[in-house]
Length: 252
Image (cartoon, rainbow, N blue to C red; front, side):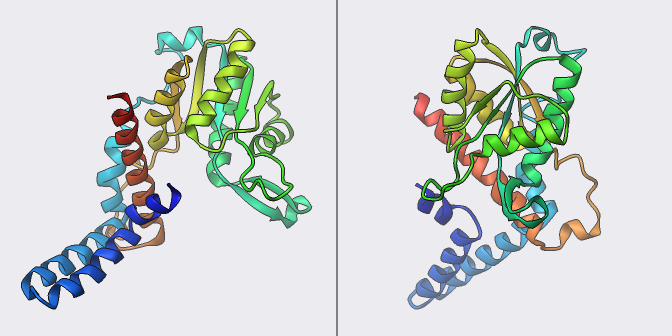
């Protein structure tokens, strides 16, 4: 599945398309040239922040920004759930410990804010990245950051999940045992809709609490030039769109 995902999402898919265009040119020169232009143009557009905006803005707009005072459902939430992201391994400034990466920290920061404002208990979810290594779970690193750096206690740690669906399934079990059926769910705005679907399928009522909105940034001249960040945003958005399609197909 991971290999298939890698092959479908740019830039690999477009590079394969570019290679295919040269093979097609051996017999159909004009068709190969058209395909080549399409692949190169698409790669250029998707490598810009402006091009990424075309995919990420509609995705981020699927779930509204949470306003605790104006969102009635938020008043009945019983816990704050924060989804894991990645980690920095062997961080020398933390004595070689694995710590949450900048994406995870953005989620933790917003989750800490909500926890302080609502006084709700917190659950963090994320398993072991590389089972073959004797390493701590993502949830443990998140809990340490929340408690030691943000001063927010963590009541539950879900430490088995390897993906969003498992985040939902394993967290739901912990929550139900604690009598919790409604949560404020914290993750990136692009990841929010798919995460909400996963938790609702697991039997948990969700009030979305998205963070990290790329679509609200001002587009300048440099937004139309290729950059690693532009390609990263495009990859993220396309991955989430494919995930949403897959979720819908599984429901058919």
